Image (tube, rainbow, N blue to C red; front, side, top):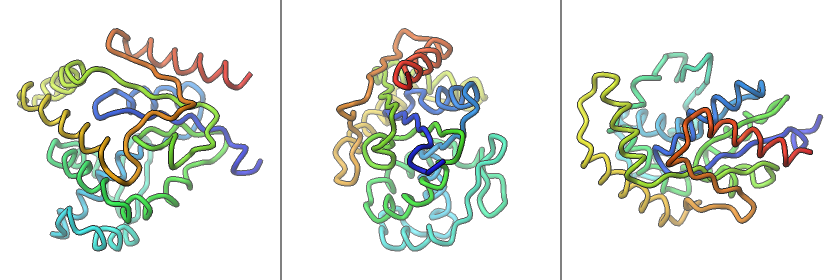
Length: 222
């Protein structure tokens, strides 16, 4: 089996659209590998913070990436063999991930790493440019979205369920700022691919969204 023949389900969408949860469940259902591309940018932001590299220093960030040893193992994120799964999920690192992701040199530095996850029997990759830049040859492309208000409420509930204080208005404001930053950046802006299926999840449960992706993938493959 050649690399090009390994099937890819590319799921893109804005922040807090639920694409990570849905992509993981789809991958588990199909027995595919999983790539959380957003985690890569979180790792870059986290590592830069640890090394006191400002998030606007594009060249320094790109150089730093070459030194990072990243693994996804059993649902955990490992950086240099240390579990940083929780550390990269804070709101501060989420903001940092969005900021470092605007840099073309950072995105280019992560391309080869993302391609390495394309292994048999298949890959489910979620992010913001999986369909348009990283895996443009993916046969199944999904753009997962929901209104900013619905996404903010989901993020709020998620944080509160973990015992983390959250302010709904601030979350909504932050999401709108991230949407604008992601859509207007010059490097791989968030956009729906012409051949992607739009899946709006405002009124869908996680299970319904997962089933919709699997059914669409099945229809594409046949």
